Amino acid sequence: MRKRFDEQFKATVALEAVKEEQTLQELAEKYQVHPNQISAWKKKLLEQSAILKYSKSHSKEVADCSTW
Image 1 (cartoon, rainbow, N blue to C red):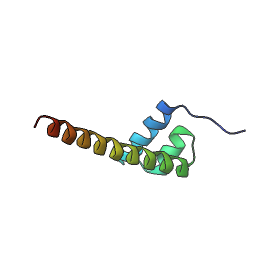
Image 2: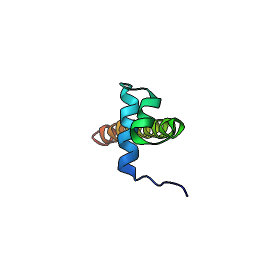
Image 3: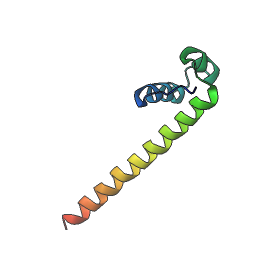
């Protein structure tokens, strides 16, 4: 049976991985998940944050254009 992790847990682990204060192996032992799973969550977090950053900057450009 597979373990299911909620989004908050995934985000917490991924944020710790992004900080790089501990190795993936250390985080895996701490949270009892496989290092590859942490890498996947970290990758997803970074991709989503890049999309969010782009969408915020893009919406600002659209707002700036609408004031002309």
